[in-house]
Amino acid sequence: MHNFQVVKCPECGALHQMVKPAKKLLHFEMFSDGKTVSAELNEALEVSRCSKCTAFYWIEDAPVVDKYEGEPLPHVRGLSIDEYVKMLTDSTQTVTTDEEEILRMELLWAFNDRVRAGNPIFQIDEEKDVWFSNMTALTNLLDDSDVYFRVVKAEIAREQGNFEVAEKLLLSIKEPHLMPIKKQMIRAIEHKQTAVFKLEI
Image (tube, rainbow, N blue to C red; front, top):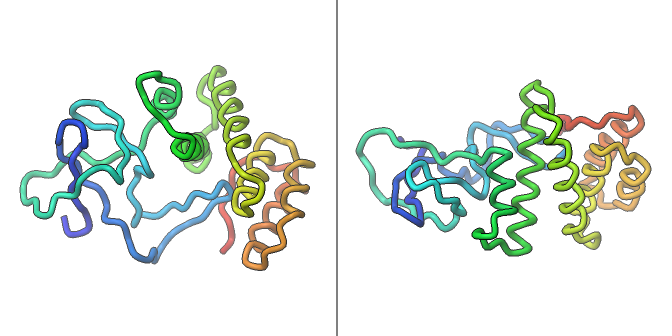
């Protein structure tokens, strides 16, 4: 388990294993929605759910076990779309504005993970409303004064088919290090492309 670390569920103490966070990724892919995909990253992003007590927990709150030499453990896993929705809508879950922003970003990624896997973005019609509501709420949470958030808002607008809004946001971005991403996103807008896509980096 040298590539893994063991963490405890903050609620019940059940043990789970996860990929050790890499200091520098050697092999990875970046996508237009801002997600980085790599075997060197754990599947779960910021939040997971205990396999024993089923409580949701933030991974940064899960204590790391110094030494473990027992049997293989359940993996710290990413949430399903339904689980993200439950965290966002369940009155028993206390979620700050910053946490809501993270959850809604990861919910966007969860939908797009289907596209990354070559599948349709929606499995049932009802998911379209969930997707649209999440995109709208996430757009309202993101601050235009942050250039990276403007990139995300442009991507949201592009995926919704609001190409003029997306292009206007992208044209406001002047930072040199973001020019390659900006050019690829504008190219996607010109082709009326709404699906998430892998960036050439």
